[in-house]
Length: 187
Image 1 (cartoon, helix red, strand yellow):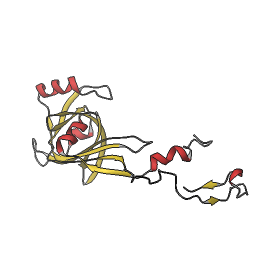
Image 2: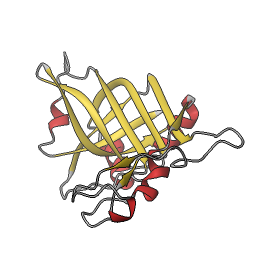
Image 3: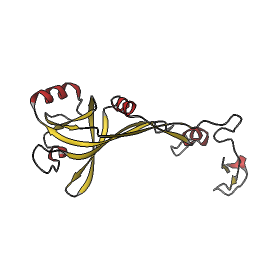
Image 4: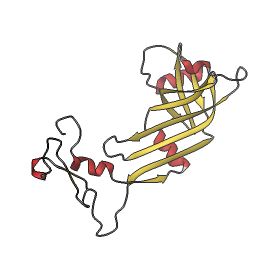
């Protein structure tokens, strides 16, 4: 860490190196989605898009989100009672330092479920963030599943690694352009 709390240049080289984005197939995307419990549901609130962070479980190919009393999601704008609305659900696990990881987006029809058997099963598997009773669950059908993995970009044999390129000198903000006096480098 440098004196103002940021990472040193050498520490960041690997984090800012180019990443390869690889598409995930449906089974792998759903498998990864099941490894985390945190995601974001995108829905329509009035005429505008809204996003809420929620926790979930994957049940087969469906995503289930528990809804507590007063939850905004419990009042989804369905055209008729018992009908479904289109939502998107996104979850990821991307390391903030290395930028390696994955992201999955599921788009599908969601409906509010309030039958006691489903709620009891959900209550045993969903770990809520806030205290309160689960009054309903949101079941999101995974009609469209898209995902990608971010991995390191392979280098050609003999190619320089990150930060091993040209060097440029920048003047020191304190007035000296000498590297030993604090001049910066562009690598």
